[in-house]
Length: 111
Image (cartoon, rainbow, N blue to C red; front, top):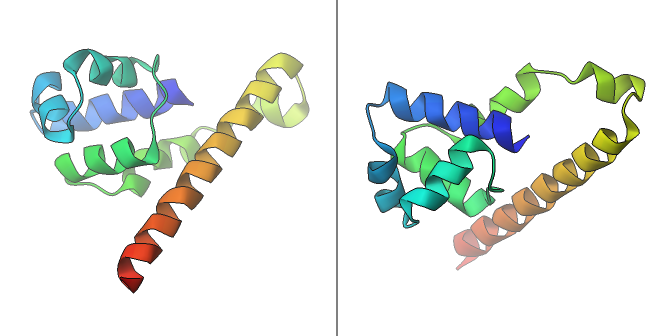
């Protein structure tokens, strides 16, 4: 999952003619951390994802859409149980990150 998101972010960054350093400066992380996000070696929080989306002038959905576009057939048929567990935990992490961000946005609207 992280590799797919990273690849999508990289493609959008290149399409916008930004360097890694420019994006990392604008979102407030080191270039090294940003490079690890693009390579899929770092997990990405919803907060960072939303900052990246803002810099690249896209929505978070535009970035995460790549997860819907490439179904994992092996996961659906139950092949490779170890990878399936990892994917489930990744999906749960993303769900709870989205839930947390949703709650924060609602709280801001109420204030």
